[in-house]
Length: 387
Image (cartoon, rainbow, N blue to C red):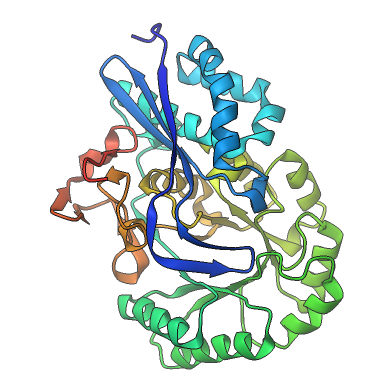
């Protein structure tokens, strides 16, 4: 079978969300992904990438257009994991232009190759079995004070302790958000970890960002993307002025970005999204270098991604090991009205997804009880007939 070519089926995926999600750079009420299925013999691998204009300047239509021109070459070139790794190392610049589109293909191929060997993607990539317990971040979008508090109450009722707050840019509103969360923190049995995300709110205005953020007096772990992406010297200045690390998201997509980041390693935390880096293999290579520099790592997620990218994120979290500061995503059907795959992966108590014991997955009409060994066959996900 290994010498047979792989066929691809690719499409845009726009799954409706249960609620509208608002942040400084975008408001969305549906997911936006490139979906890929890779076939060989009787096996089918599933993959996903999330193009985001404000991160990698990609759109779903552009990604689909590029993949149309590529699939024949990929079918004729990639027959094994070794071939995939070679193609990635030889075509780095092209992947830099289309990271999310390539991620959809790569994650599908990894799933297929792992299924063909009857092992997990982690095992395929030399990471042993899936990391057992994943603890996710409570993300609080930029909503009205009432919605903010209601969502916060929901997260607290589940027992979350890791929070990321999207900033609005109006001081009274942002101060109120922090006041609210600190009120609950004081009355909580366990410590909270709080970080802020500005989504590039103060473009070209580091001089405005610094005094603003200084007025949000609050013990926070880091501030994500306060100004325009990739202005590393200004970001370092801001980090030093406030004495908190800056979390890099849009500013960290490829090797060039990494080379700039390590000029000031103590100023930064890396937020890695598999999609923007161009797949799992490239993400693992970046994680290795970040660990050598002792830089803390967040495994990020895009709003509206399916359980395929959640599952791929688990791979990266496993590789990050003790450098893992936080993990984002894990919403599954808590945010998607329906997931593209089953079982759908979504967090429960304390924001955890545990694959080290039987996992209960609720879908529209059924409750799936997923045994541990299920995850040792590719991603362990199948196309959802209800979707």
